Length: 132
Image 1 (tube, rainbow, N blue to C red):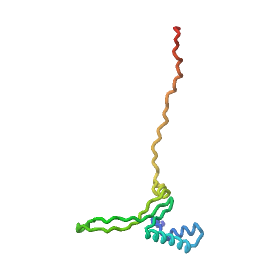
Image 2: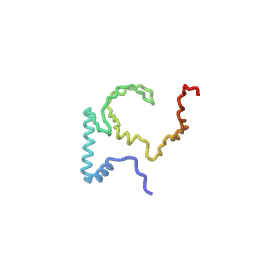
Image 3: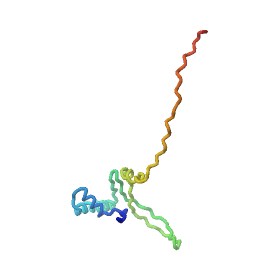
Image 4: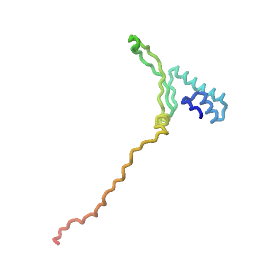
């Protein structure tokens, strides 16, 4: 019996997959992937927004100073303002990742049987003004 696969994909695994698919060496692919990641970090550190259409957007936001409480001592403490990285999911990723899981059967609403209407009677002749 084989060991269950981990649910985490590492950079090493991604490099391996990309190298196999593109035919480039793992060394070259690793350098490109690392350069991409380093560039993203550098741009975010400069306060820039990184946008990958269909994938998502990385941006830095400031989190305001706030009051918090130490749960052990119940002492009030001030948490200083800090910068945080936010990621907003793009459309393609949302459609792929946030859709129902493929292994789970989709539940569709039961279809209503088509309505059967009684046949319409032929139109009656208009009333005549004749006495007969």
